[in-house]
Length: 57
Image (cartoon, rainbow, N blue to C red; front, side, top):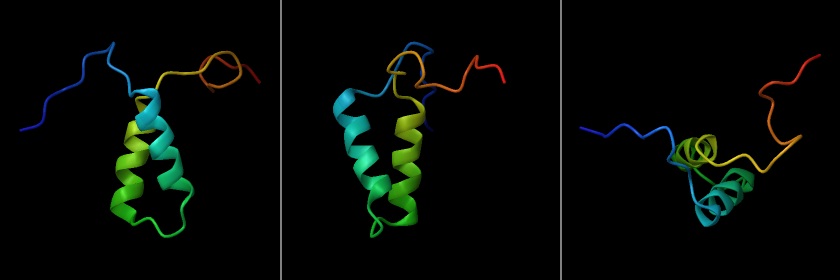
């Protein structure tokens, strides 16, 4: 069936940008938003303050 992603695979900047537009579009279908969210989950973090991982508080 599907293949598992390697730990070092990430979504490209262009795909992440397109996914962001899909999520912000109120006319996007539930399926489109699901795929877009999945792509953004695999996107690279942009640096400090952009990720909730490791934050204390």
